[in-house]
Length: 500
Image 1 (cartoon, helix red, strand yellow):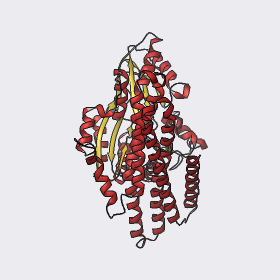
Image 2 (cartoon, one colour):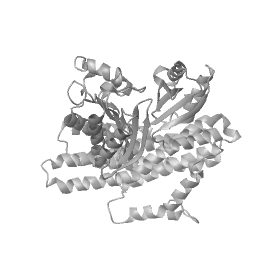
Image 3 (tube, helix red, strand yellow):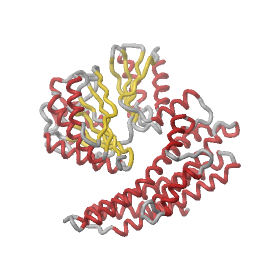
Image 4 (cartoon, one colour):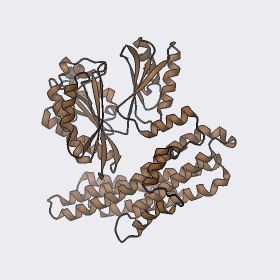
């Protein structure tokens, strides 16, 4: 099993020639990288390839895919419904396991620099990797598409790329590379061919024009039907079912109804679980009610028939073993995950009861948010141990490297970032547990008290790990000094907030 797992979803400006897409896929196939999905759309003239793999391998795979696309795709001859600025239009990296968004930002910068160096394609950074606020949104970078950028890149300072020269590749254009959370590409088809209706609905639903948060949208004519094409950039906060209902309501204003919808690429299972809960109106729904989820939990040893001890005992014994990992950082993350679990249980068991019906919406939002925080903390259990092991490896190799201290500091930055992230999450959980007291069953107060205590213990332990890692750093650059200063300030702010 890879120690790091990153998703990459490159979008290529070719959706009609299967042979070209096959060649791009072949170029991407390298050890450590797995093809999960490929989608071609002839109307959009675009394909979306979903890859997952280890951190180092997937960077090289993405670079090779860009190179092959530059050989095969000529944007001067390209026509399609979807906006585009490059043969490889966009290359996002998404953290899955053992990596953070910050890690994916570093990956995006490396890949962007290599694309410019190897292929002469200018690269812009977007989302979390953006070098300026206006470049966080892809549509701002891509405004005017290939033709508009080609006309302005040499003369307009706002069009200066982050990597490469200020001129587009003559046939491959420019590419956007970045880091982001999981995105759902979701399209709704209407029972009309009037694309103006789709465009009006898209304007109503997208956030930039006053619609739903975390929704980007446009209207197209696809397969003879008007299509509302959307990107959902944070499905936990703006779920798929809410978007569908919004589009359905707006369509009714024009005498239309949705006839179908589609997912381009892959969708997180949690998003479908949210939709199932909403449309089926299942009381006290929890992902553990799903047969496959419960089976996976049992088979992985997380749940044992006849007792809970079998699920937690292996981890406790690992903590007791005479090895450095897992240690206090992993234990802090585990404590925080248990706090989130307890708070989520109390909220779930109170939701739907007559006495708390006025808090239904609030409790539903809290339950979904706690589930996300719980997953983050579970990932940090291993993430803390892995970051510590990376520090030890950096110390071992320092004697053999001319820039050994830089490698140690880089490893220590990561080892500090993991518990700092844990501290920020558990501080939020502690507050949520307090906020739940007046809106949940008072007979479960002891569970919330336990959740608060676990969260506070996790916070103290995580901040102790932050402090010891910062003390171990020997800053040798302005970047190191800035990291230490900002991290200490964030840790002190968390400690002060917790003491109030």
